[in-house]
Image (cartoon, rainbow, N blue to C red; front, side, top):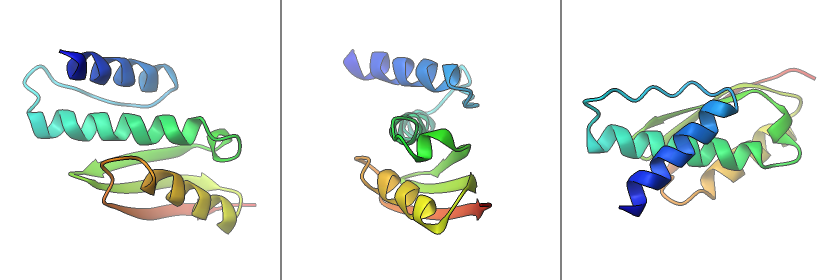
Length: 101
């Protein structure tokens, strides 16, 4: 019972932060797990005092995360990647972040 409530809270929280997360009525357990993982990574990024200020989109394919968007430096890109890697359930992170100082 707690897991669906947690997923709903994370999805609502991420949506309130401007993230686009679509969950269809016929969502599979795998797609819900991806949605939950996206929400947890996005929340971790938004809670960071540096990269939380950047527009970083999070995409998931299973336990693989892809980060897209813009950051101001290579250090910010590396920080975003490390934050995403530290989220439980993330197996790999692919950074596709554009650096724009």
